[in-house]
Length: 176
Image 1 (tube, rainbow, N blue to C red):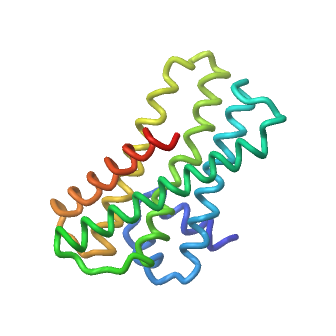
Image 2 (cartoon, rainbow, N blue to C red):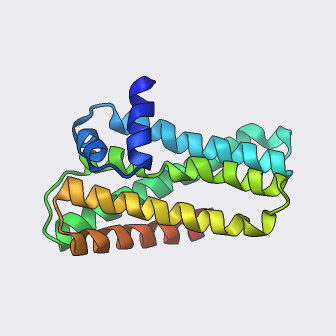
């Protein structure tokens, strides 16, 4: 658990060293699955607290959210790999892409908690901005992933991260 928290802290700070280490971490993909499922769990808890989901729909809601988040994460990783290797000339393997992309997903663990805090504080009108900020933070994480994993220059890493984020948003519109 200590390793996951250390890697999570580095990923949230967008540290290149963390993403470089994750590229060789044999547990990074399994950790990323836990992170993405945690995103779904926190979103579900936030929905219950805010009153959008009843406690009876808990298991069904968790399964639906977890499946959607896992699909979104995998699409982001696949698009990142495809754009980086097939279009922009980077070198890398898809298995090495999945784990670090999952760690870049960490802002979505924090976003529901911020939405709850805004709701409790009477500032729920600002809640939609939380998702935008989390998405941009995820995009910055993808930018670092593209630079570190595929050794892309900044401009190419920006393109890879942007296209991956657009793919993630398109899947979000379809899946969730």
